[in-house]
Length: 403
Image 1 (cartoon, rainbow, N blue to C red):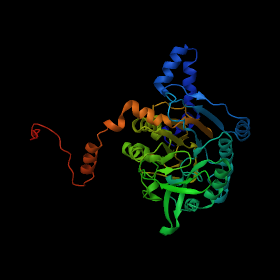
Image 2 (cartoon, one colour):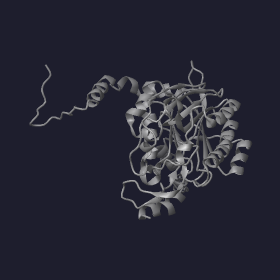
Image 3 (cartoon, helix red, strand yellow):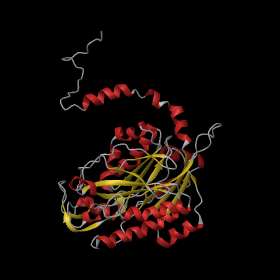
């Protein structure tokens, strides 16, 4: 085992960064605490009381709940508030990867059902699960046996299971699955199924960007999606879905804003050694730049596979990715973000927001009217041509005056 992986397993997987931050500011004056929280999180969110049924579920089934209200800048005179409760669930796998496909999937259904019920009891309107939530994140292994058996159609058993919960609680559920496209000879996609509040499937989105970094060998299993920047008008809000690796592309986030998204969810699966320094930045920046709410969701735990694998990154053969660090959070368009969920525990986040804040922030900053889209459209069109060579000004290539 490499020194890097050993350090991560023994130390990083045990640390709770938000709790460390709170410990560091203990004993400081209120003025200093407020200043620290303003710089790091954009301010403080207001805690929401967690009701008795949800509290009992979290205690009995060992998951945490964090719930916050994100205040708007002001109450408007002509528009009524558009209050929406947004949820996110992060979790570890439920049983060993050596168990049968059916046992692994059923155990995850049983686990997630408790968190969804807690969310429903708290009045959550829209909730998103983590990437490929019905299975271990086996795409590191490059093995097809038995991992491909987790794939299922859009209207498969997982969707049927979730539809009942969605209908009972009038809750929109976003369910990321490994999809088997029956209409295309069993083609595999990384897909999020959108189940509306009536329990009916509203549509689906397929992962746009596929990573080719470290142990993330996902191109072995599925190809880039064919549903870029799809917007779903649910009962409560217009939503977009930016799956995992797509968060690294600012123009990807921008596409959802241009098409009218009010909330963009980023269901992910990523590990500490690879991406944690970026995690708190990208979805938050996207919320600010595009004037919508973002929800970043990451799984937790270390998933160990039966066979060793290598991935062209120079590390010795190993049986796990490393630590999935959780830390899911929500950001408002003004940059205010919730504290992160745990790095190590199954967790539910519930955040109440007012969608009116989107227009308030856009009115303040005027980003839509100052973004100069024609200039960027011209640049992107040029850059998309394979024979394009970017031009720079130099002594050998002086700038020409426009006539």
